[in-house]
Structure formats: structure tokens, C-alpha cells
Length: 514
Image (cartoon, rainbow, N blue to C red):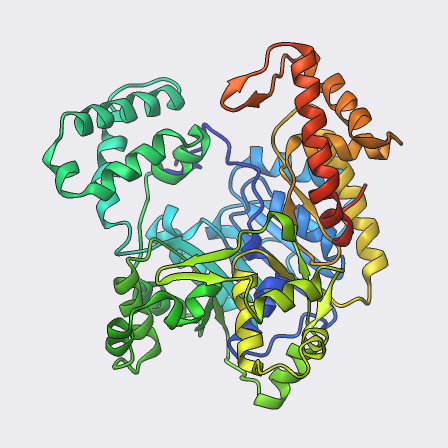
């Protein structure tokens, strides 16, 4: 009988991560920023995630977007059990999980006739050529005209120097049997010894040594799924675009929004060379070579339907944005390949000030800047950059907010209860953005304390310590573990005070509550 894993790692479960790029509102904004029409407000939207892992993203998104029906599949039954369990705890009625292979999913009972959005995050580079074809066939058969496909993958030439490292790691780990995690440790130790012995590969390719050091600090579950599957293929953009063209897909945009603006990423000479390439696919591939692209987050569509200038402006004016980072904790500059963007300068400063009081539309931003010399294109570019920096989030319309709040409360309560026993599930759902926000375990415990009616940082810290202390959990401060109850409670209280001052107002503005 054939192995059901098809060479994919099943011994260590995948992480319970949330991936921002999967957010419908963010994809809709990316399409708008590139002049492509996509209406998130249309009724009966159908969303499909292929290779959903633990299903945490699908569950969070279904809580924050009750107007959309979500379908998510994964081949690993343990992942699907976990996903369905969280859906039950959060009382989610608009998400369905399937334990199925790519080969058989298209004929799965219960699927809608077609989808508006199909997503694959962290899938394409880690499956076989046969399964990639099954994915393309599924998209070809199931994506509606005008629909969007999001796909992420390891990219060339950025991964070129890592190919030998991965080969050595996999070969070393395959020499022995037993649990995978210690075999990964031994393989990393072996490569580190080669680096310390100044093997010429590391002397010539300095980036390989940097990458190896980064690997050693990563969680073993992540490393297992990133590097140790049988199939592992970094792709040139042209090859991905060519294969997706079989499903009638056209490239729309990268969801790395800084990439939208060549003057922020490329030198004048580099732009001059790039501008000589007129073919959009070859241009994107050439750009990858210039920036040594490591990872791509690409949005494709089935049938490009461009906005007119007037229709695009109309959508822009009504689109709302919300801060997801406290201005007091926000860095003063955004780093790019060509330098830094000063976010204390205009129009960045005024955009952030306008959105500080809660979600505001581009029209509100424009009104706040009446009389200034800032142009429309400068405003929209600055908003796009701030979204790319994860300082701003595009928001859903106000209509339907009450229903979304109730769905998110149920989900967030379930996730915060998990914090009583685990570091997993590190994101909460926002009914304002339709996406998620990372919230630490301590912060989730503070939210549970608030939900219990506790008042102020001292009481919140007391609740957190009541949960952590019996588990033998201790906090780190300045790299050192705190041993005494007094020190741990003091640190929890200090963190709770900072939470109250900086994080809680952001959570409240995004309606993230229990």
C-alpha cells in the first residue's frame, strides 16, 4: 500500500500559525492597489484553503468573516482533528474541514461548485510535481471567473545558496532512525562543525553561515516541515506563472507591498535595466534576480478586470484603515533595500494620526490633509507602505460589524482559554479588519482576567501567575530566568502595565475582546 504521506513530514505536527496574507480584506486591498476589481461585499463568497495545516488561519478568518463560507483541506488527519476541535469550541458554523489528498479533493462531496478565493500558503514548494499538477487542475476547475488565487513559495535565486545545506541536512538525518527532532539536532551540529572548521563552502558563501545560524534557533517542528520533506523545490517566478497560466491565471501583485514601489527597493541603475523589460512576467523574474528574492507571496486572478481611474478612486475613498501597532511603540522609520522611510514625515505622520482614533477611510485622511501640498498618489502610496509594514490594516465595511463581533468573541475566548495550558494559538480575531493580531500568552491571560472582572495590572498579573505557577512556568528577564514568586509576579505586573498602556487600546480599537 502506498504511503499516505507522499513523502511529507507527519511525525511532527505543523505550527498553529496565522498567516496575514490569507486575510480576504488584505487580498482585496492588494488587488485594488494594482487596479484590479474584486468585490468582497458580494453575497455568498466561497473561500478555499488548500493544505491548511492545523487550520488555525481558516478558523480565525471564519470567525472574523461570517459573511464568507470557508472550506479548508489537509491530508494529515491529526491536523484536521485539531482544526475541527477549535471550530467546535469557537461555535463556528461557516467553516468546514476536509481530510483529503490533492488528487481526490476536487471530487469531494460538499464542496461548492466554484470558489471566489483559493489560497495556498507554504504548500507549493513542499509537494511533489504530481501534486502541483493536481492543485492546478483544481484551480482550473473550481475558481470563478474574476476569482483570486494566493500562493506563496520559496523563490530563486534567493534560495540557491541554501540548496547544498538542505541536501546535507536531509542526508545526515536519513542515516539513522528514531524520532526526527534529535536527528535534526545532530544534522545541524554536523553542519555547524563544518562551518567552524572553515569549510570553503562557508568561506565562499558567507550567507550560508548566516542561514545555518538562523536554522539552529528555529523550532524543530518548523524546521521539519520547512526542510525535511521528500519534495522541496524553490521556484523561479516564471515557472510558477507558466504553470498557473494553465488554469487561465494572470499575475496581479505581490503581497509584499513594498515591492510595489521600485524606487524603494532598487537603485537608479537597477530600475533602468528593469524598465527595458516590457513583458510583465519576465520583468518580475528579472526583479527577483536583482533583489535575490527568497520568498514570494503572489496574488493571481482568473480574468483581469481593471478599474478605471474613477472607479479605483471611488473604492479607495471608502476603504477604511486601522492601526494595529501603538504609535508610541512604532519605529520612526521603515527599512527598505534603498534606505529608510521616515514615518514621522508627511504624509505618513498625518495618516497615522488620523487613524489613531479608530478605523478611518482614505476620504477621512484626505480631508485631514486639506490645504497641504501632498498629492493623491503620495497618499495612496504611503497608505500602501504602512499596510506593508504591518502598521495599518485594511478594514471591512462597518455594515455587519455587530455579527462579526459576536463571532470573534467566541473564537477569542476559546483561544485565550488555550493560553491556560499552551503557548500555541498566538493570534486573536478582529471583526474590524477581518484578520488576526498576534497576542502573547501573558496578554491572553490578562484578557481572561479582564473577562473575569479583575481590575488593573496587579490583579491581571495575579490571575496569570495563578495559571503559570502550578505548571512550573517562569518568566525570562534580560535573558535570565526569574526564580522567585515575587520576581515573577513583579515582572508579570510590569508587563501588564505596559499592556494596559499600549496594547489594550489597540485591541479595543480593533474590537478584539472576549
